[in-house]
Image (tube, rainbow, N blue to C red):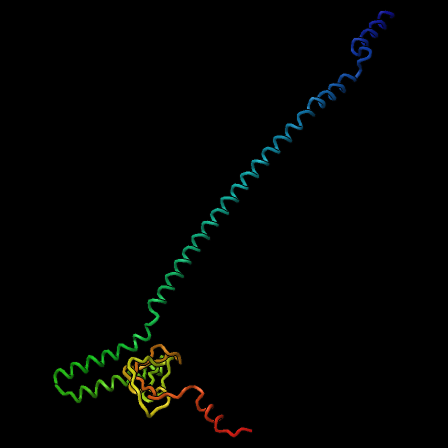
Amino acid sequence: MSKHSSHGKNHNQGDHPAGENTKPEHEEQQTGTAEASPQQPEKTGETGAVSADDRIAELEAELADSKDQYLRKAAEFENFRKRMTREKQDAIDYANQSLLLDLIPIIDDFERAIKSSATSKDFDSFYEGVTMIEKRLISQLENKWGLVRFESQSQPFDPEKHEAIMMDKSPDIDEPVVEEDFLKGYTLKGRVIRSAKVKVLMPENPKPAGSSESNDSGDAPKG
């Protein structure tokens, strides 16, 4: 019986050695945890590197998009500039289109008058036709375009409206007067655009400036 007890003790001691118990398993778990923890910063570093690459790719895409938009805007502006230049040049080239369209029928009238005079040989009819064409042209230019032909003969000489190409003297006048109108003058909406070329009559004995005043003062009695 003592042998059986001794055998039981030895069996228990063999299965559970003193001082080991469950402690080695707990230490292995802690050791495993301690070994795994240093790897966490490496995972964080890898995540940060991936995010930076994504951000660079995103910025590159934004830059490419901005560059594309800039090129599109530059092309649109260049097309707009060319169109405005072309329209401006067209406005200059065709600014007188309406006026010319009004003149074309006058040219037609002259052409008909010339053809008619060539067959009829009637000078009076030709003269009458040309006179009518002139009146029609002058009326149209005056009423629609504001171009007015002004008369100068017997009018006081005005250097703003008249250009003297001949001069003569007369004892019958006191101020310069237009004697003859060689070439008509024109105004456009009230502004002189062509001076009339005229012959001017000048006083033969012009009075000195202030002579009348001096005579009056000389005749006055002294007080």
